[in-house]
Length: 186
Length: 182
Image 1 (spheres, one colour):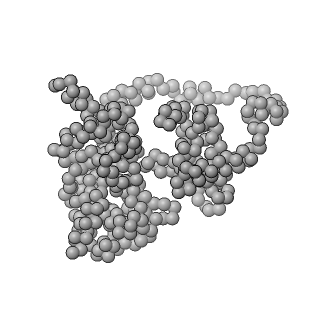
Image 2 (cartoon, rainbow over the protein chains, first blue to last red):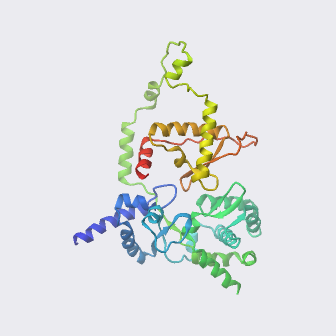
Image 3 (cartoon, rainbow over the protein chains, first blue to last red):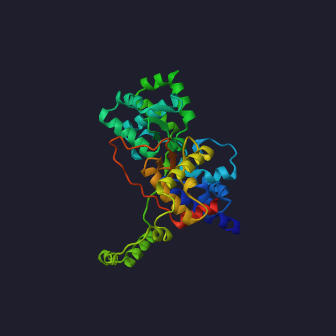
């Protein structure tokens, strides 16, 4: 192995440990942490890691502050961003069950996210509660919404308004979800 | 679109959702190294009864001290505490107006100061601002962020909500890290 290859192989290994293993309450690693441990060339190291992950149907995801998409990020934006490893492709419905989600819970999450998107980013908890009660048992609805909030899919403010939170920005392609729902309507 | 959401079947929404859902991968695992580290810690840990013995208070002969002596020892302050708290509240309001967002400011931005000693003092004063209803503390546990929002007027607890104590660690290492990043 050339010296240069060995150099990057060692850095990719370190980055893999940092991104796969839970370090904080919130998954993933901040850019500045990667810079500190791996060096200023960490974006290149992550690109190489991403190539390694491709055949495994995984990818390195960058979540910028406030969930915004950034085309050409600056060093500062990268340092403040969170880097995660996530599924690159799609799950089959049976696989969703395997990763700990019951179809009811997942449907509730999908409805809550879609409804908040349709309401331009925020909705009273009461409305989502009523919507979910139409198809899910009433006793479960409150527990489920709390769970979505706890996991970081939704956020709730002191006025009981629900918003999309960081995990939705990281895991859900919101534009594609809206497109698919609108197509389904046609 | 919300009409469509209301009409869609449960199975169909799940089928649609999993096409655009890319769940995060994360592992939790104990390694041989972490087990070895934990065992080393356990071996060096002094038994509880010995640690408690160390903490037994010794009897001290009591006496009287004048106010001046307490001020000299920095136990009491020259300025009346309520006045100092009031000034600190005004400072918080000013900083929020200048650099805050949505009527609040990051805890670190407000509390951390040039020296660690001053930082500890500001954290101490901030705890009183919150306890006495001059400000509220907002915690975002997932983002690991805290914000302080000054109240327009000091608020008195009127609801029946349970009061909670929030311990906030303020180590010299944290302060040094913040200072370096500044």
